[in-house]
Every structure is written in C-alpha cells, then in structure tokens.
Length: 270
Image 1 (cartoon, rainbow, N blue to C red):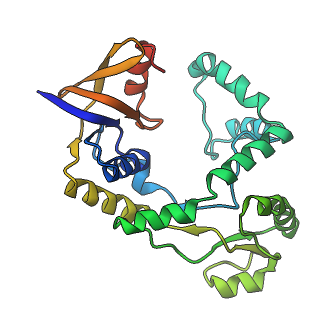
Image 2: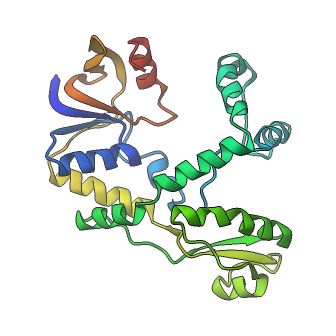
C-alpha cells in the first residue's frame, strides 16, 4: 500500500502533533507516521510546565561534576552504559565545552527569547479549539533559604527578555498558605507570576481530535525501515505498512526512536 501526501510527519508526540496542527491551519495535506499510538510516550506524561523565567540549559557550570556523582549513586536518575561511552564521547566533549558560565548565559538568553511570544501562541492555539487552560502561577519550594535567595538573584537578568519574575523570596509559612500540602520542612519559596502549567493529556487529546476532523492521515504502530531520496531531498519512506511519499518531511520521532534517525542518517540527510 502506498500513501501520497504533501507533508509527512514522522512522530506523533507534542512536536509532531503541533506541527500537523499549524500545517493543516495553513491548508497543507498532512500524514503522521508513528511507531506506536499517537500522542504516546512523553506527550501525555510530562509535567506540562509553561516557563518563561525558569529556563535552564542542561550544559551549565558544575553539570559535569554533578553527572559524575550521579553515576556513582544507584538512586539517581542518570545512568550510562559503559559500552555506549565510545560512541557518546564526541557528544560528551561538545557538552563539556558548553558548560561554561558565558555559554550557559547565552543559552539561557536564547531560550528566554524563544519563549517570548508564548502567550500569543497559546491564544492562537485556543482559537483553534486546543485545550490550553493554564494553572495558577508556579510555586518553587526550598528547604534551604540561601538557595532560594541565590536562585532569586539568578532570575533578575530574565527581566530584560520580558519574563515576569518574583518580587521577593517568601517564607515557609507564606508558601504553605498558598499550597497547604507543602510540608513544614520547606523554609522558603518563590512564586513565579509568569510561569504556569498546562494539562498535557487534555492538550494532546484535543489536538488529535482537531487533526481527525481535518482529515489528517494517521498511520500508527508503524516503523520506518528505509528512506528513498533524490539528491539532498527525501522523496519517500518505506515502512512496515507500505511506502509513504511526500514533498516535505518533518522528523519529530523523539529520543527513543532511533530507527527513523538512523535511516535518515544512512541516507546522508541528517
């Protein structure tokens, strides 16, 4: 079986679904190919934070030291398989080169600029019927008052990028009045006036319904096996359910799907 569509999106997570939404808004003919069920993985299972002030690049001063400590602690989240280290070495070296104060600040500024129009984007999504109801402001609790003060000062430069930041550090009693579930161990906190959260499940489900109403082709539980190209352009994808031909391709398969990336890489297109 062969499917022909102008725009092919590989991956039906947050990025793929949102790409399809805006492409169909512009009148494009769209097909989504996903290796599992549409909107699975991290699309529904993330925290849903919409942050304009709390933006932190992963490469940061001290990140390498913290990572090394994590590797020795079985209870920490970071784990690297020894056999993967040779292939990861170039990436790790590039990461380490970016763990400087100046590059961290540059990355932070870039993320802040990227988020600058988030309110307008949310409004645009809402006009299309997407579920974008926001929570109240985010609360950031601290056991250590000194850390709260340090992070409060670190937020000050974000004002120049249009981010709304707290006007002060609140004490433990005040943050418990705002969120009674917070324990007595919390001694300070920040109230982030411009940062909110959204329910990712409602967001994803509403986008899928809109895309179905726009007759987007959805091909689920389908793996990419190879890529057919002409020059430097992809022309077709071979999948476990037939071929998919298109004029434009969006790759948003996520970190866990290496097959599509490897197929595109073998074709010299990544």
